[in-house]
Image (tube, rainbow, N blue to C red; front, top):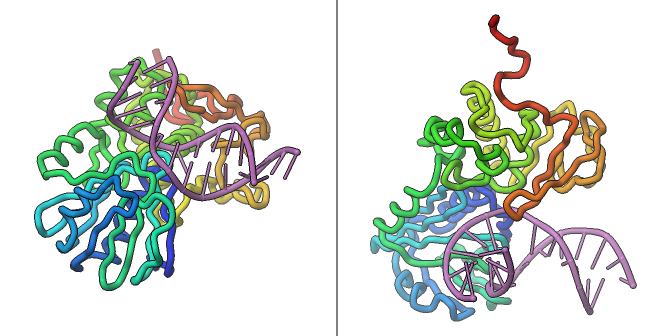
Length: 285
DNA sequence: GTGCCATGTGAAA
DNA sequence: TTCACCTGGCACC
């Protein structure tokens, strides 16, 4: 990946955080940084990091960790509004509510609007990670850990996929899009899912989210459908397309509120309960 | 220019 | 269950 001179990283689902970790590594790893909190809400934390060497960034789900040679760890969660704006050094005077500014001899990064920005110990980091399910973007992810929860649960697939303790890093966009791509009924219970269907869903998530990291945005259309997307529209099947015709079957895309969030789905295409794979024939009784 | 909605989470009530 | 976080994009005037 190549980084431009100035880069805004927002839209925080898991792919965003992994992309951010890669960029922070490229810009800061091995360098002494100055840390400050122009906004004033992270003055003490910034003082703990100031003047130490940034060793490596790590993403897990929607969480970002910055490891420093002092052993201190910066934990950031962007939440809904959080952004990182990175530039080459020296940075311009801070604009807006900059919670944290990191500057090295090469680069600078401004963090705004995060849900979490704190300095933690490794024990605290591990405690946090222990509450997360496997992250499809990590090599060490174990999808059977998620399956163990899903196949015993009566909760809907839509609800399970948004639960960070089941799968880490999925947000409302990936949830809607992967359920669509697998033609799964969002209301179907986890307990009805066949192991092979879960495997297919997981494989699709891994591929989609890697694509998101590479491209820097969430695009989910298969090549054969990409030409049907309206010009200038994001390349997605259902997310934020309510009322518009499905690109595949023409049925109007619907929204349903699930736990306070809008779920986007196509009633025409998404009819599978997931009891068996697409095309798989019922076994003889 | 104004106002609304949104990718998420956790604290307060 | 509701609100705070406090930003960016976009529709609308």
